[in-house]
Length: 346
Picture 1 (tube, rainbow, N blue to C red):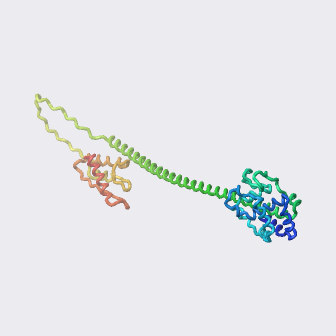
Picture 2 (cartoon, rainbow, N blue to C red):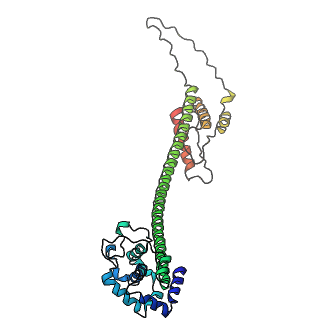
Picture 3 (cartoon, rainbow, N blue to C red):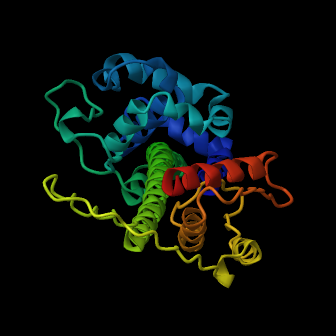
């Protein structure tokens, strides 16, 4: 970030005299100078510790301090600080953790017992925090190096924090997307079930409507049958008892039987009555007495006329059909009326 770049610029601004002052301290450096230079060496050579456990990340004064001295006398030291890519610390997170511990400020996520330190041996205790004032007292030119190390560690910690937050956010997003997919699948399943239930309900309603229609037709048919039963049938003639064979038959006198002619019984009147007895049918229907109250009134009337004039009339049945009805409907209607009259009127 900007703070680290600014600190690197301060290191780049060290004069040859200031660098020489630091190099003069290498033989017997103050503790603060040794710690800050060790931190610089660990950071600039962080790739040495790639893929190694945190226990392997340490600065050994016997083997590493001579290397640190050579680093300071190298003319490319300042250039290596200026060109250092802080992103490479992401590959070796144990190195900045070690440096932070050595300088006295610990990055998050590192347990105290696992934090390495600048030491001669494992028995040396953890050293107190290193602050700017103690470095200035020991060597003023080392102060820019301390600020560069601190800002480098801060930037790394901030980047790791953001990376962790990004990882958590990505995982949360994936989990949310998975839940959303599950919810969409559940919704689709529920909608399919609802569609099936609606279809089943529609079928049940259609069946109920059909049953209600059949019930209505049956009730009307029952009314027709009761209406026909109420018309009654002619009673049987009662025969007079036969005379006793012992009784002597008396000769009967022939009495002329008068013939009475009713005006209402003439062919013209009968024809007029029959003309008024057209049997109505519902559209596209050829059945008689299927709950039609009009047929229940007309058909018995025709039957009565035929019974009254049995053997004297020839009845011509003529069927009709409306436009748009199936061909032959008129014939079916004529046959239906004929069969009913045969069964009832004989």
